Image (tube, rainbow, N blue to C red; front, side, top):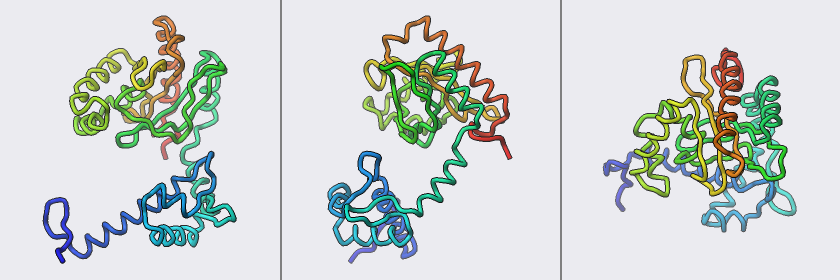
Length: 268
């Protein structure tokens, strides 16, 4: 039997093999937890097997471990989120909840401009929505807090990637429908957004959807988040885009001037 190999084609050591197996087990366990959603609060072993393609014996072992850790809870209908997640949820809320004045500012901005306000941060090749205030209008754009969106398009991506290295742009481009050459287009978009002070998009990721976004700067001057207004393209006329951008810039400056190391609290 041949020894497992690493990415450089050299035989993997026993320690490396054990590490790879450990990482794989963690990824599988997180994948199981990721199957739980608002629409599907419980999952059965059969659901997990079908969704992951794992062997039933592997699923049973992982589920048992998660249950022992309090991360899953067995019910008559399947497995639901366990009480052990409460502690993590509490920690996450403390770390990511916006200051009251920022929440109030986002509510006022949504009411004033009548479009949805989102706050995004970059995570590898994705942007994650960490806060939202919905538009009061019946026809509106809604992204759920915690949703991960691709970075190869969209107004928020254009400002979040302002300081991005070529390598990350290339990785994002490879994941896009347009292939590696899209990195050149992205760099042009990013430079245009930096020159204007805001990014805008119209139907780039989803037809009929537009957005305007501005950067929020940390205490070192780097981009830590993107503040955006989004909604139906029909309402994002040239004059409205200019108005949206001016209002977003004012609020982003207020957030930056508070001296946040991130948008979620003052630096230690």
